[in-house]
Amino acid sequence: MSVAIEIQNINKKYGDLEALKDINLTINRGEFFGLLGPNGAGKSTLIGILGGLVNKDFGRITVLGKDIISNYRETKKSLGIVPQEVTFDPYFNVRETLEIQSGYFGIKNNDEKINELLKALDLTDKAEIGPRQLSGGMKRRLLIAKALVHNPEIIVLDEPTAGVDVELRNSLWDYVIKLNSQGKTIILTTHYLEEAETLCDRIAIMNKGEIVKIDTKENLINSIDKKVVSVKFADSVIGLAEKLEGTSCKIDEEENRIEIEASKNDLNDLLKFINNLDLHIVDMNIESAKLEDVFIKLTNLGGDRDE
Ligand SMILES: Nc1ncnc2c1ncn2[C@@H]1O[C@H](COP(=O)(O)OP(=O)(O)OP(=O)(O)O)[C@@H](O)[C@H]1O
Image (cartoon, rainbow, N blue to C red; front, side, top):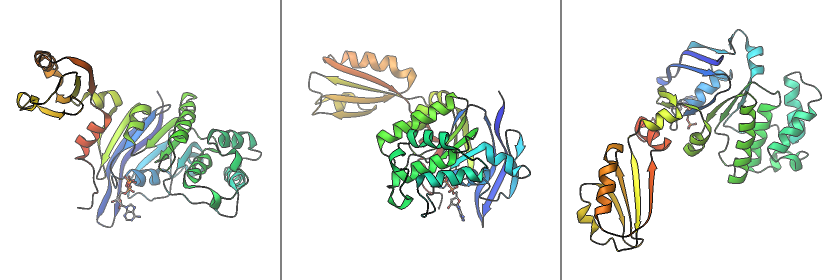
């Protein structure tokens, strides 16, 4: 598999604050890669360095084998970065904004791509209006279209769905999945962990300027030894609290439901125990760990780095 982005020993300080501490990361071509971390972890700083908007203190990044500093123009063409902050020139309408952006990359007559993007991002009927008249979610979608007009190989999405409603979020993901299936490399940062869990193949979790873990989504989730067994009974669960003492258990006396957290090895004993309660079971569900559990464990529940 060939390499899309190689990040080597990247360091960045803001005054005394070490925003990035020796970041090393390889992202392969065609991957759907998640870059996750709590607020202030350093994700946007890293993306800013990749896009040439933030100066690194030390280290090297290559895009498709080319150094981003010495081959600035070429590597810029391979990257489509959707930034977190929304800014537009208010004098140009949606279509003009995309035409001008195409022009920056020397692309004339880009109507086909622009129309495809407008359609995919549900902006076709907004093509002739100015950015000021767009809602927050529409502006964000325009920002995505703007990053993609030059048909880049590598697409970096920094919190693309913040403020975008559920329906459009889904259509946006359908489009990004399609691009990925066409071979485009996708790098995604998001605070919606379920999105990352659904979409990403491999994930790096950052915290306080460091990458604390990189692995496949499956390995990350399997690293957490947790099962949550929830059982609904026909009979009353009042009085069960005593029997369940010592377990990590929630009891809902109104719904006659219990929820017990257990490790994988204890599952067998737990199910026998539930059976021995001699209550009539109506429904049962066993859930595995989620990406959110991994995230919480590795980032100590996240939070701001300002301590
Ligand atoms: N221009 C700047 N000047 C000073 N400090 C900065 C600057 N930009 C970022 N920082 C600090 O660097 C750290 C990393 O910020 P960054 O925006 O990269 O985090 P992030 O992981 O993208 O966070 P979020 O999820 O909130 O977007 C934070 O502590 C932030 O306050």
